Length: 462
Image 1 (cartoon, one colour):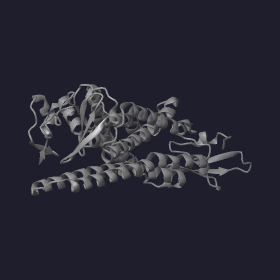
Image 2 (cartoon, rainbow, N blue to C red):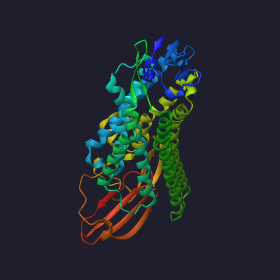
Image 3 (spheres, rainbow, N blue to C red):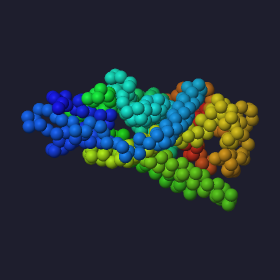
């Protein structure tokens, strides 16, 4: 017989999540992955442990071949995720011209993905495969807290990128978001993520079994509080960001299609085909952004919600394998994001090729502005490595790399008079004259290639 008190859950906890409220009236306590059968004595003050081993003999995750396969998968995710996101951060920090609003959001996304790679990718499978917690009491609180925070930062940053692109494309002639505003939003994202994840870190704790095994598990005051936190996390961390991203990119896609149909002038068959290809390429990119976000994060969120409301589902022999499949899909987003949000951006590609010359062999737009030549009226742009599209460009500085020169001081749009809007294939040019600075501001808005930052070109005073 084993005497217990109010600390009973710390006595019988196993390496799987223990929910004190999940104990049924017949004395059966459900834990993630198995059942501990408890027999109540006549006094009601002590319990006899009939079986203190979790019944996981039929769990597929215990197979060595499965553990090796997941270990290889997580190792690939870790290497690609860290490499891609560190490269994004390095490219932005090394070149001040790359420190634009959109790129700062992408850098913040890369930082959160690096945290996920360092904390969630190796530790989650390691903890399960080892079968015990070996990282100490402090890290039991800090590691899950940091994991949850980094996921919030990642999803909220993706939402901010979608909103920023929405305003760039839908309202191209409105003032762009300032860098100070962007930095404030990023700080708010971090603070908000740290605050809303606090309960998760607080209610994690060390639990020790009667066999002196140490585990790090959730220990909520009640089943109700656990469910409230689970639902709020699902809504704030997945549902709201997914809806905002989907709505923003749907509106952007519709607007780009409308602009393509409304462009003036007669079109040759070749130009019509180029427009169709460009529209299809942009739509595929937008659909990919929404789909990858949903596919990556929906499964793990559904598993967490079902686990909060139906604790007995953890008895299923396929529960852990399902969890790891969903978890690996979510962690793989750390590899997709640098490609979707950076590599498809022409400016990022140019910087990548400077840092890593072997990227030149993959094709793409060459860094022609270093030659000092003015671009011709007609140029061949290589898209996706092998597709050539004829584009008409103005003989100006629009195709140059970003300039390090600081813009002339002025009061911005409120002192300017918009004089002309020109549509160039997939680009829009806004021209405005600033009386006080006596300068002409030309703003080029690229509608594809990740809707990269508008490039401003200031002409000499008139």
